[in-house]
Structure formats: structure tokens, C-alpha cells
Length: 125
Picture 1 (tube, rainbow, N blue to C red):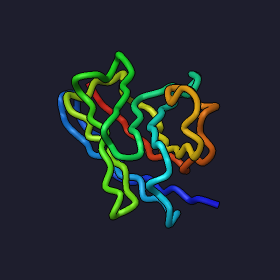
Picture 2 (spheres, helix red, strand yellow):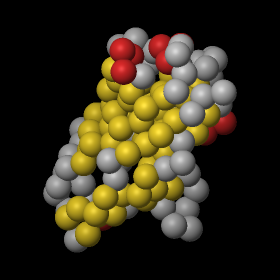
Picture 3 (tube, rainbow, N blue to C red):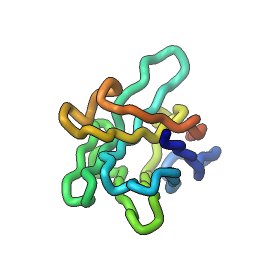
Picture 4 (spheres, one colour):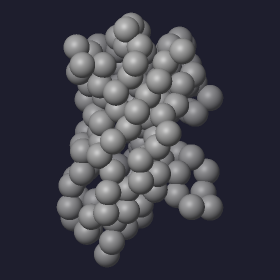
């Protein structure tokens, strides 16, 4: 079983930055593809970003490309999401997810085996 714990959310103004962190309990963290998803009230959970095991390959949703950066530190079992130029439409609960198989599309929720509890990000205009 893998536990994921997110942190770093908060209330910011439009144009501000936040960095989310997600720490995994697994001793074999490097075997996991990692992803960030978000869910706004009344909406489905949507893909934000994903990163390969080594960190060499990254994926981004079109709405965040150029503003958000996903990265990982395998020595610390941690994945990060640096969010710059935040907009009110970025307001959501952000979830970290781990994918052990890495055999499908990392942009889909069904690909992931483990999920964190989420951290709230609120961007005011």
C-alpha cells in the first residue's frame, strides 16, 4: 500500500505562485509514474500534469502548460507542482496520484493506483 500526502495549497491572488508537494510512503517510489489532477466544485476530476519515473518525460494539460511545472526528487520520495501566474479558474482541490504500471495514458484518472487526500488551492481575482 502506498500513501500519498499533499501539502502547499492555500489562498492566493491571481498572478501569484504556489508550490505543491506530495510525499509518498513507498520505499520504491522510483517505480511510479506520478501525476497531479484537480477537481473544481461541480466538475469532474481533470488531468493537470504527469512525470515519468526518471523525470525525463513530462505531460501537461493545455490549460496549465507554460505556467505549471512538475518535478520529482526520488531521493525524497516527493513530487512537486510549481504553479505560476495562477488564475481564478485554477481554483480546485489538487490531488497527487501514483501509477505503478505505467502502461497506459498518464493523463487519465483510471491509470493511477493510489491517490492522496487532496489540497485546496483557491485563487482570488
